[in-house]
Length: 119
Image (cartoon, rainbow, N blue to C red):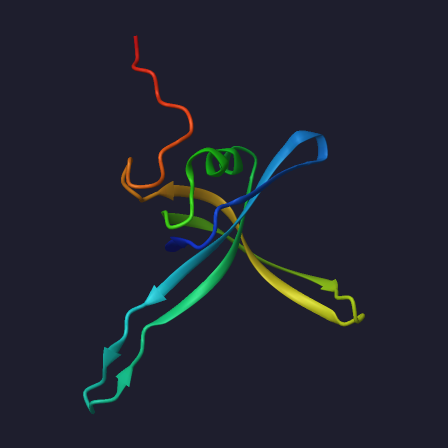
């Protein structure tokens, strides 16, 4: 479970047979504090690669923008690849299974099409 802010606009693609996949960078932070002996521990920010599939990815594509706050539930996946120099590299991602948008409606950038009132 992660709660954090989106660092960049989502990268959305369609793969095999039109399946939607979105990737986002999510920043989570731990507040700084001062120990009893006076030592200050600074704030610490971690960046997470989050992958969302199908319906979650489509929702991210429509509604999520840089700066939005999200709640993500998912599983950790680590994969490897070979870089241009032939070295094996590893990347760790969170494959989202659930997401909740925590940014209040209207706080992020307006959508390109205005919503029509319900009949």
